Image (cartoon, rainbow, N blue to C red; front, side, top):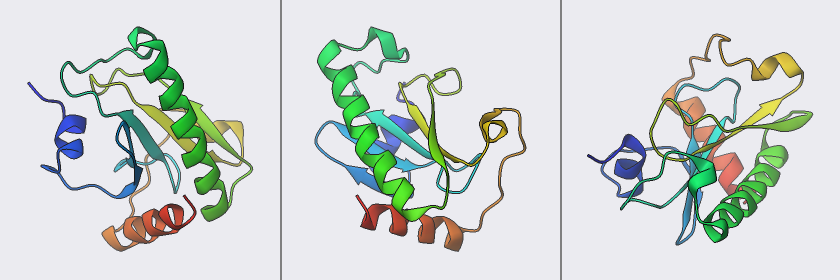
Length: 133
């Protein structure tokens, strides 16, 4: 059964897209830890892979390179000291890299309350980041 991320890749579920190429896709997390919290995923839909270290080396390196480009765009669009990176892969069984704009280490605590942003705020953030990609 296709994961929610595969459905996003296929356009079956809407998202706040940041960037994509033929192998990778980046979009805003709908339950963000901070403004600009972005997910970067490989476009592996058959079979889906849920553990980053099981990716082929070429795919892993490409994913991290694409994530770096997205992180640079986020830094230009969202005021922050750094872009934190997290890879857990427990909540959706499809490899994904979290890029989280942070100003302090505690911004990365996964149990922090998630932001409640409007559709307009999400769209505005996505457009700002995409414009810098």
